[in-house]
Length: 294
Ligand SMILES: C[S@@+](CC[C@H](N)C(=O)[O-])C[C@H]1O[C@@H](n2cnc3c(N)ncnc32)[C@H](O)[C@@H]1O
Ligand SMILES: [Zn+2]
Image (cartoon, rainbow, N blue to C red):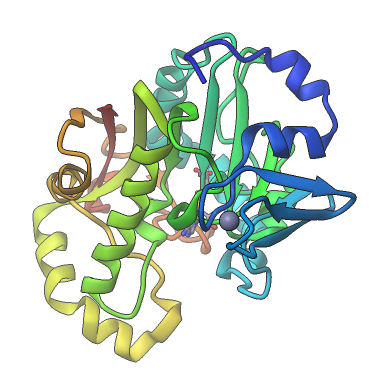
């Protein structure tokens, strides 16, 4: 696929099975897919992957892996609407994103959640990939809803113009910091694989201030032992993310940008507790955009 050539209006008007066959690929072996009624099948004779179409969602991962976010997505939506959160994490970011909504471009929003936190235009075709079935089913902002994971994107190599990932990387956690590192690197490997040459990977994250980063480094494994899956976040410095990206895509060129909000603005530091409001100066994180050109 070349850059900026998709007729987004025509593809949006096509039936879901045609969209799946045109834009997606097997998450295991990347072969083309074939859709018959509600069955999605990998066309490779040796692969055996099967997905399904359920409630207008292309289910491209094992649905039995119910995500933590399934019972949190409404809270998350309300939390995102809070004024402080918008100001710190979304307002300026939304303006930047608008520059990538080029006619005919294909964008994949990885970890898109239940609603797009940015205004979009009809110009691009947006594929949303989400591992929470309830969230992706609820998302009416994307053009194609895909139940899947960043770690095995059901997309062909070099098929999208822009990868967008807003505040999802810090939720990719396993049992140890080492496991977290390898999950995040796996996601970055996938982002670099699916983006077209000359395209961009836009990762919006929350970067911890140095004292928090050091404390997290020392205490995360023990905290996870105690809290188990309740501890579902691990924050990364932009430098570590860039090192991980470079290890898999050495030619990726980073431009980074930090964001801020007035020090006295307040917002809930834990999105699942929207009633808890903190002033910005007590929140030891800064939103950052890592924009890699590939
Ligand atoms: C804080 S929410 C952000 C949602 C949305 N991007 C936004 O900014 O409003 C984090 C999202 O990351 C998703 N997520 C967690 N693990 C993921 C993975 N392995 N692949 C893709 N998305 C993931 C969650 O399901 C959740 O929807
Ligand atoms: Zn396959």
